[in-house]
Amino acid sequence: MPVKNRFAELLPEITAWRRDFHEHPELLYDVHRTAGRVAALLRDFGCDEVVEGIGQTGVVGVIRGRSDSNGRVIGLRADMDALPITEQTGAEHASKTPGKMHACGHDGHTAMLLGAAKYLAETRNFDGTAIVIFQPAEEGGGGGDAMIRDGLAERWNIQEFYGMHNMPGIPVGAFAIKPGAMMAAADQFDITVTGKGGHAAKPHECIDTTLTAAQIIVALQSVVARNIDPLKNAVISVCVVATDSTAHNVIPHVVRLKGTARSLDAEVRDQLEEGIARVATNIAAAMGATAEVDYQRGYPVTVNDDQATVWAADVAREVAGDVDMTMQPMMGGEDFSYMLNTRPGAYIFVGNGDTAMVHHPAYDFNDDAIPAGASWYAGMVEARMPAA
Ligand code: NI
Image 1: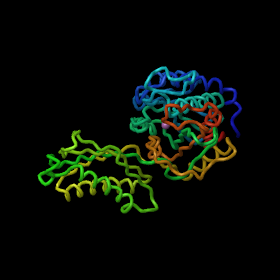
Image 2: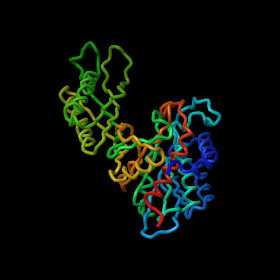
Image 3: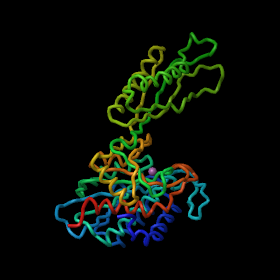
Image 4: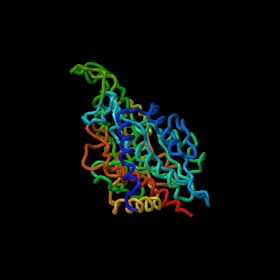
C-alpha cells in the first residue's frame, strides 16, 4: 500500500479545501466556519453520523465498515484552529484576516483527514467503525481535553486514537515517530517577589527584591541540574523579569518573574513543580523577602503507546517506503496528549519539506504532503480493522 491512488485523484479537491481553510483562519474555539464546512463535507461523503458541538466546536464523523464482526472502533484526529499571527507568505491563498493565520498547518491536517474520510466512506473496506475527529483550540485552549471531557471516547467506544502533525525539516511526505514521550508537558509559572522598596542609596533600609529575584533565577537552574536525574529531560526558562519601577535609584517593592517548565514524564513534572516552589520561597525567605509561586499545568506529556507506535510506523512505512524512528522527542506541547491519556494510540509527524518552521509568519502547509498524510490516516483504519 504505497500512497493510495485514490488520493492522487482527490489531490486537487483536498488541496482546494486546504487553501479555503487557509484563507479563512479562525482561533481557538471560534472555528465556526471551519467546523461548519467540515460537517457539511462529512455529510456529503455519506458518513453514517455527523455530530457537531463536541468540546464546544469540535466535529465527529462516524464511518461504518462493510462489516463489524468484533466491535472495533478507531479514532483519527485532526486539529482545526489557526494562530494570532499576521501572515507573510505572499501566497495566493494567504489569510484574508490580518492578525490570524494557519501557521501550524492545521488547515492541512483538517483537509487530509477530510480526504481520508471521503475515501473511507466510498470504500468501507474495513471491519469495524472509523471515527474522524476534528478538534478546536489546539493552540492553547485545550480543545482535545474539552472533547474528551464531553465523552468523546465513551460515546463512540473509541479503542485507539491516532493523530498526525506536519513538521518542517522532514522531507515532504516522509514520516517520523518514536515510542514513549513524543512531545513535552508544557507548564508555566509566575513568581511574585515582595520585599521592601526604597531609596537605592539606603539598601539597609530596604529588602532588595531585584537581588532576591536574581538569586531565584540562578538557583532555579539547580532544580534542573541537581534535582532531576541527569538521564531525564527538563527545561526551566525564566522569560520575564518585571517591576513597576523605571528609575535608576529606586529599589522596587515587588518584582515579578514569569517562565515555562517543560518535561517528558510525570515524575519529572512533579519535581519541577515542587522544586520551583521550594527554591523560590526559601531563597526569598533567606533574603528577608517573600515569594508567591503560581504554577499552572498546561498540556500533559504526549506519550505514544509502544504497540500502537509499531502499528503506526508499519502503515507509514507502507505509504512512504521508510519511516524515521530515531527522532528525539520535542519540547513543545500538544493537546492530543489528552486523547492518548484516555486510550492507547500514537502521534506521528509527516514531513513538510524545507519550509519555514511552524508558528513562523512565512510558514505554509505543503500540499505535496497531502497524498502521504491522507493515505496514512486511511491506512490506519484498514490496517487496524482489516476487512473480514
Ligand atoms: Ni500545531
